[in-house]
Length: 139
Image (cartoon, rainbow, N blue to C red; front, top):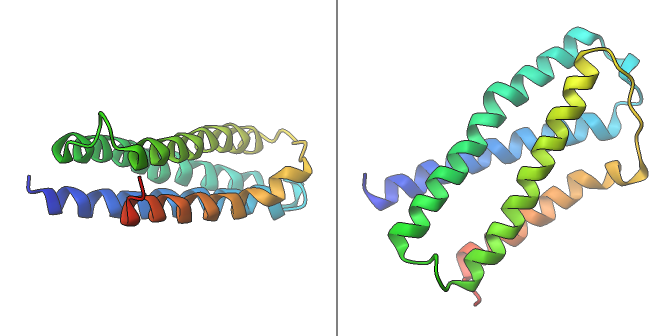
């Protein structure tokens, strides 16, 4: 497959992944309690996270690593390693969100820390950082 097609698919998967990540982060941060929305809503949110956001992250990683190999960047591109660190952090957040949505869909309550309200902003900052690294390739 031509490089530009891979790059386009990678970008589309990244946008889908980030949109799902942000949607879940906003729900988890700003819905006052598990009881504020019905268990059916939480099941639907979990299904979206599982069947849309989940495959998107797999495509992001698969296509991204393919692009890195085709571009010859893996061994020594500092910007790529910094990007991979940010993507790994977002991937871990995806896993944490999946667990929180699973518990809410099962009707279990949740404890919310003050940090949860900052997660949507942290996602945006990470994405801005990734874009800066990919477009600018500063090192």
